[in-house]
Length: 116
Image 1 (cartoon, rainbow, N blue to C red):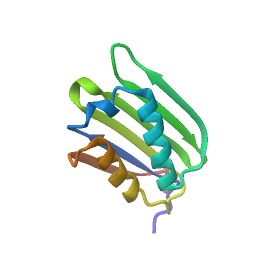
Image 2: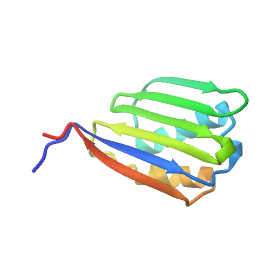
Image 3: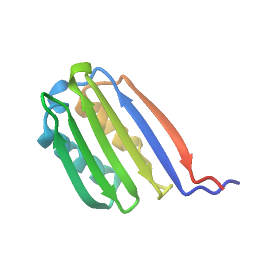
Image 4: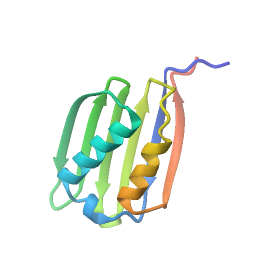
């Protein structure tokens, strides 16, 4: 059996509701709620509004990190969740994000990190 140090989830959300892709406050709120759902232990938060549009949100976690980067002009959001606690199930986080972004058009890649 392989031992791993963490699991890295790369999520691509397409055909998203652009109201959530253009607002720092909405991204901050949805990341906070998603973190609560995932029981993430947030250490630090940083959010940035790009001009003319687009948002980046970063949460440093005790478990590693959670990020969202948006491209409203493409109705697209890139979400990165890296967790060193391999027992955390992100299924409910993904379900929540699909609901908020109003899409079921997403792709998820799971990568084991630090494989021994």
